[in-house]
Length: 472
Image (cartoon, rainbow, N blue to C red; front, side):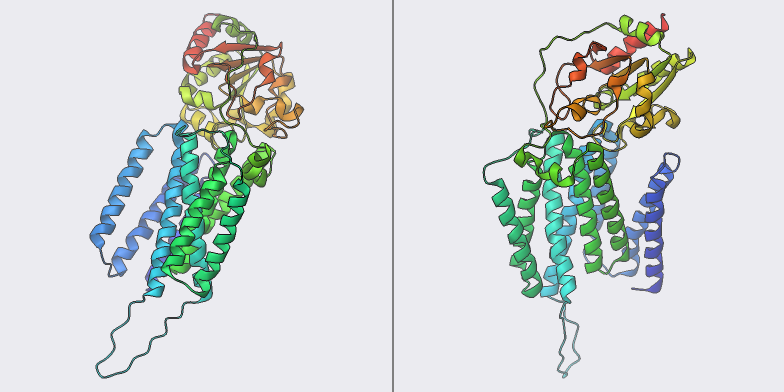
């Protein structure tokens, strides 16, 4: 590899690090995203310049197809569907890494021999270091796990299959046997490599990926997406070692490290361990997914009654959730907040770490509506404010304010830190129906005497509520 290529790759790696740093804040996120994307484009173009590539037409065609799919996805996928798109793209990355590792294994077993001068006896040593073979086996297995698991998470979030945990008798035994088979095949890949063993290892990885994600239900699925994202990053880093490519090594390490850290933060926000999230369903500890609507009586009201509550409130806190994203009602909500603020009310948005379907979901959604970032207050900062709040307006959220997390041992979300909406003087829930949240359990706060429900589509209800507040 020429020195100038190494320097370009080093610069790309530095740009990836700076891009990740830029994504940590709203003011620098766009620039960071563009910097990372630009570095990726440069890293892809460089091999066309310094290598004598074969099958250039197929490579360019594959890049073109991927570019078209990426552009269409970016333009057409709604914010509410972003988690499943992330899961699908992440799975494709893991699968690609596994396929590249299989091709490298084939190259190790069938090396291209250099030309030998006429009338000269040549001997070539093609012994592959054991660590390179170990990295290859790791990439094949973990990449396959990431691909299969990501496909299942996509299907769950896209409602192509049930979001409830899928378990069957003997699942732990089958999972354990698959894990043992993976270890045995991984060792054989190092000690006695063959394509048959490599393909078997990939198949076992697909099985482990399916068994890993099927028992995960409801609100736990986004956390598994983050974990699988870390898996894909590790496979890319390992493939970077196998291919002696510093850009893949650095980029994969960054994705693996950030994905692991994000998974730990999300698990902490849920008040549970990663092992409980993955295997909790085997002992009844996973969130349930879709549940039945309750028929218990509640106190409901129309937009005019809720407008009176808001109109005379000095302190209001908004709790946004997935229902707000589904209805695309963020612009109407911001207009309502602007009207209340112009009349002297102090209004903030309470952001739970796992509100919506992915970290930062609500932040991005509200930023799209030009909500000042200063009004978005994280859970730890705002929880002490609820007891001094006149009205809490919960828009499309449920689990993040469910008191069962504090009061009901044995509940799937028990131990999860929540927004203390129950401490406010009045609570208004905007809901389409009495169906439970993504965790699949009933919210007792809906039946609290302080709670009023405003039923209907969030965008339609907020529009009526806005008109009613303006009319006061």
